[in-house]
Image (cartoon, rainbow, N blue to C red; front, side, top):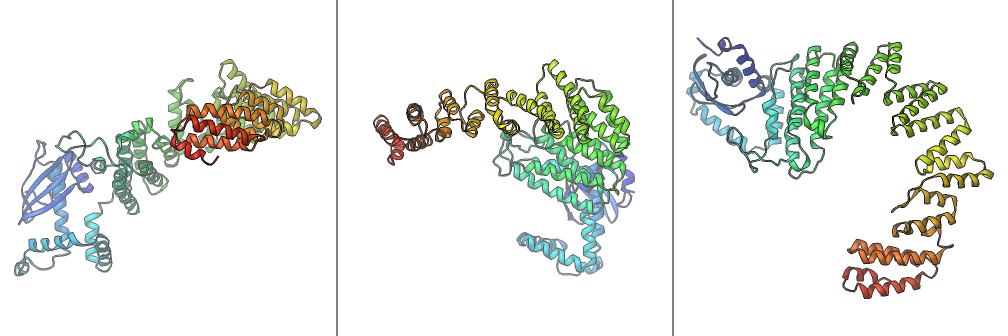
Length: 582
């Protein structure tokens, strides 16, 4: 005979496990005793299913579920029976009288339930929570009933509890879009990002609570499912309806990641659970949200969790296994080599770390690490030799990305060695390669003797291929300004006489070249005014006119220009309004 005490013996093992999972998730909703011993519930699954159970005392007389399962007792029935059993167990804390005494009262349980529902419907949520909290503090039976009802059995060791259905529901939109799901529910192609985040935060808080209860497996299951669901559903911004927080789901990822790291660092968490978490993270790393968008650095989380949660020797084994499957051209090779070197040093296997570094010195990232280590150890000659070799290899391969960076490291080494001739030659080389640079210019001026500077500077300028033109500020012009070289600055403005450049640099030449500047301003302002419309452009014209007023003879030239504009653009009302101040 099936009873509430032994029904687990009548369910298949896999059905029993899934039923427990559904029960722990709280998938059983709206459980009601429609009439004495007749129970009805809705169970959330792939779709919502209805379960009906008939009892006689503790005996299970009948049950039925409208799911498509063709066996005897399905997982939805198991979850419902577990909930009924828990409900009956809980009721003993509230019903102290015998059944006969209850019947003698002048109201039924249905009447009481209706009255309570009416009270709950109008009660303020905060006041209700405060009342329940205070009541639980002073009534042990009620406190125990709350724990039995809302705290699942402690799961410390595994990710068995499946929160997929619950977390996935956070991504269901309001019924305003196009398309229908399997159960007839309508889905929207636009969703509210903040609303999703708000729903997810409920589960994140639940996971934090479960961690305090040492239910590590359930907490990890929630964190993993949050990351998995975000990775599954996240799309580009056009997918979302209006929202205020661009980083809402990123914040949820960070919270889940921090939760998992707390578990990884916790010595009470079983190693088997940490292994399962790492395996899940590796699967999540392949989801498109993390590979195509910058929503969250899931690979960094995986690597950091691995380093903290697993023994270093085991991490090293995993890294070496990955390296064995890579060749020299694979993009991910550098990161694995770097990780192996770090692990070897952490394990005090310094000779192996050194050998690994030299083995992969052809990788620019590893060469950088080698050079940095040599500089820190003040092995400057060896560092220079390593850099020279790297520069030569880059030039042979017609690659330029690392050359400038490595030459700059050479400069730093020469400065530490106080090798002034090499500092000067290297800084000059870098200045020319970069087509002008204020830092290298200032360093050179500091080191070159005053009597030699003019000739050195002239040669430097002649050898430097400055950009042919510019729209905004120019390092070439800035150098001439700092030098006080008005002749070269004036020549620069002849080659780059855009209105914006004139506005930036004319004040340095106003005393020496007022007529030339007025001529260029007048020409450029007229061209700009003719081609540009709109208030912001008219204000820009006014800005140029005000700058012209600072030049000798500027008032007369501005007056003539304003008269021309008033005649030519009299239909531009906004422009006329701005010009009234002139």
